[in-house]
Length: 377
Image 1 (cartoon, rainbow, N blue to C red):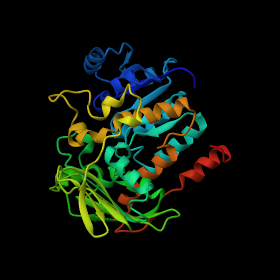
Image 2 (cartoon, helix red, strand yellow):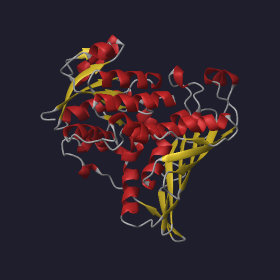
Image 3 (cartoon, rainbow, N blue to C red):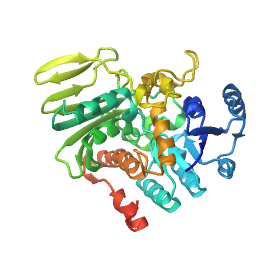
């Protein structure tokens, strides 16, 4: 498309982190914001100087001066709002996960193809500085041939909004799934998952999921590499960590065991701590500063940003990829097929855990997408 991409943000908790990025991006315009609470909407709008404001998502979608919608609302709303925005002729970026069921994933893939608009899942980990550095190590041959991959995400969610209470651990697994699948250059084919431990009856009653921890083994399509994913949300003592480990025949990258202890590169049998560089130089100069700072001060940072250590400087990279995919008229890096696969790993993993470790196939969304358009992208 020609001209700037006019972006609206829905959901202004975590979503407010992206307002100044779009305002500064040379190819974007921060066109509107949407929040159900009028008080919050006014406060954020005044703070960032955004004039156009909506308390209704549906009303916002009727605005012809909005090209794209960035959804940062609660998980249960993601699929419905994504599909509505696509059908309204808007490009969509959505925070993780894509959806909560396989049928919702299929519906989003179909809606993208029917609308002709771009969809991107805004998965932070694969734009974190740690991931970008390790990807370079894989590409330049430092790690050699990948032999095995491991991802883990452990986080205590007590005190978060009520819909999190008792959520099956694997239903929010993309932070652990995405780096291993991206580094392998493959999508997941099937999963076997073990549910372990127990959470309180009060938490179990919300979603019917009893497990404190879920751990999964993945087979990958057209790849000899296997992957392991571990996830916990409640009543499991562990410092917060989103991590991935890459085992290669020449070198292995191992995530630090505790925050600040240092990441390790094992070259052969010899481990050494490594420094992770920032990658602001890969961004337009106007938004490069946002790899090392958020929009809030020390007293007002969003909980996800604090616990996630700033999400590894990923926010401007995500916004840039989304905007440029629209300007360049190409699929974004985390398109609907990729997002559906990553999200479905967690959905199918939990199903496997509830079936005592039965192997569950991951749907082939690429075939679904091709069928919807006669094989055209």
